[in-house]
Image (cartoon, rainbow, N blue to C red):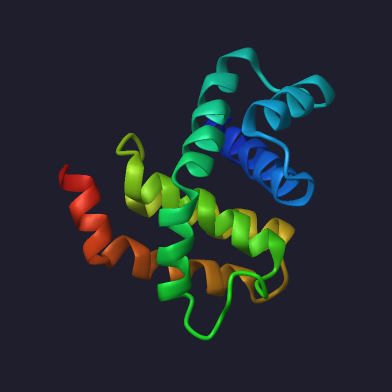
Length: 142
């Protein structure tokens, strides 16, 4: 059985994926998701924080992913991988409540569950680069 935080991250990933397709606002996407999926009441604030935070910092996150996903344009990246990377990058750069190793491991597990056979390795490599980047060091120290 996966923990509540893992389940919440999976929900946040699904909302981010949905938003990538529908172009809805984060609030609309969250409302639709919560209405149609069972999410523990005490997990909803964490899911909301992850989705809204990721979307709020999307330009910065996408710029960094473009830099570290060598030879991969974001538009050509599998939508699953792109949204897992966005979620993981948000946590690495803008949230200090979860250790980086846990964030990366959780993202890799999501990639293995929802992506292609190579998604786990790809997500691990990119997020490891993001974690070790100067941008991550700056955002964690501020």
